[in-house]
Amino acid sequence: MIPPRRVRRLLLPVAGGIELGLGAASVALAVAGLLTATDRRRRITRLATFTGGYLVIELLTLARLGATWALRSGRSPEWYDRANLKSLEWAVNAVVAVARRSVGFTIAIEHALPGAAPGSVKAHDSLSAPGPVLVLARHGGLGDSLAVVWLLIRHGRRPKVVLKEALAWDPLIDVALSRLGACFLHPGSPERAEQIATLARGLGPRDALVIFPEGGNWTPRRRWRAIRHLVRGGHRPEARAALLMDHVLPPHPAGVLACLGARPDLRTVVVAHAGLDGLTDPRAVWRALPLDRPLTIRWWPTAPPPEGDDERREWLTAEWAIVDEWVDVRADTR
Image (cartoon, rainbow, N blue to C red; front, side, top):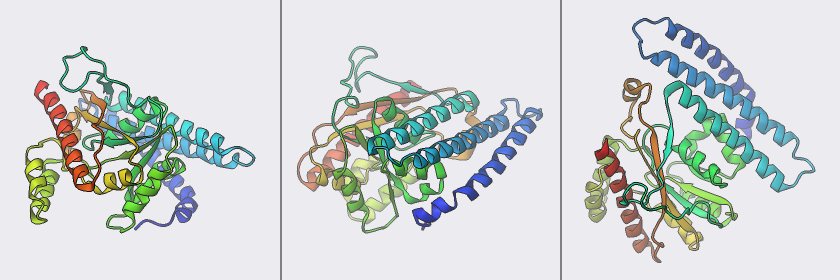
């Protein structure tokens, strides 16, 4: 259980001091990495450079958000929202730039529809169309959440992300995303569904509610654990479907059902990615540095969600099977 938001805000100066110390340590480690003859790929220097860069970006963004809060008096709520979104946009773009230069992290956008020949069909840009949207994002690999937020901001969307409560320990995620209406969920809380429903009811015309239906990063071990959980819970049809999907975790329907129950009119878009999903532990990330392939990201509108919870569960499983097939094709091409 994390402290209440008011307490976390009082602890921000302490967190800033800790981050300054970590930033100085990162600089020293980066220099030491350059002097290490056995590290020919400069992994130590790359990781230390990225860590130091992220900490600097975090401190600068928190200062910018603090200035926005101080100047909010006499300003309109629209000004406050725009200023906070601009701060998040600057931070996300800066982190992506630092990650590209330090560890080789790049984002590639694929525009063809799933199953179409490369360059043959252009998908309808469902993220730029007017009106609020529900984004169902795949969760797996390095930097995927960052890429989803980066993508939405590029399309003029204000991301309202459903997150695990533990992520509020990161000051930048806590302050920046809270200002934009993020929902931090405590595991096992009976109020989780109502929190998501309340968030859905308040969506504005340029808002994107982001849910990661898998609930955690995909790994082979988590996949088998999820399948065993479905079998033990008596959900054998869902378990059989999950056995056929190698690259995704079986989606948890509760958050999606709560959202669609509150706003059945929402357009729904799936965001999938591939390329870095095999980096499932620190050892794999270490071996892969510097990254030699991009995180390829693709989005498409789903079939219209049906009415009824059972039908929506089947619809979500079918949409996730499409995601699995899309990832599988990219795995084969590698």
